[in-house]
Image (cartoon, rainbow, N blue to C red; front, top):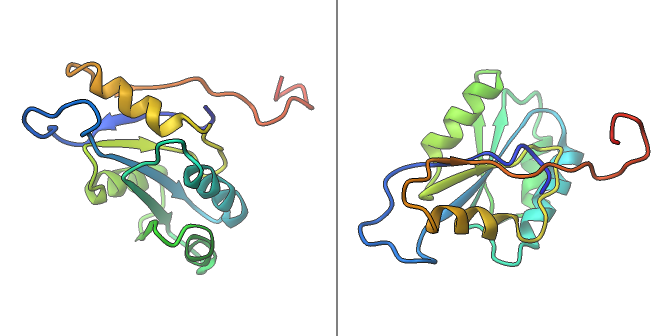
Length: 148
């Protein structure tokens, strides 16, 4: 999995929720990187078991590039503007806007592996005590020393 992989339970799951019933919101907070955002969105569109909702929080946008990217790449995603600059404001807005029982954050410059959403949902379904989970983060390439 790429991205920061953090996921958190947005609220109390439905009473008696069975395996497969938790709804997962995949949230991407972005600011001024429409090309990377498009790649991240594409990776969410090809999940083996997709998220119940894809939410894009555009943080203090200077133009409509992110909104156009969402409309072109993933029209089913919900686009929201957070006017206050800062990742903390964007993530808090995502938590407030999310419809899912679980909110999984994917960085806008990351690519989710095909089983990303399914694995996060399964972690929460398999443990009612789980409040937060994280996953492995790997580089998309290993050409530079930093990527290695």
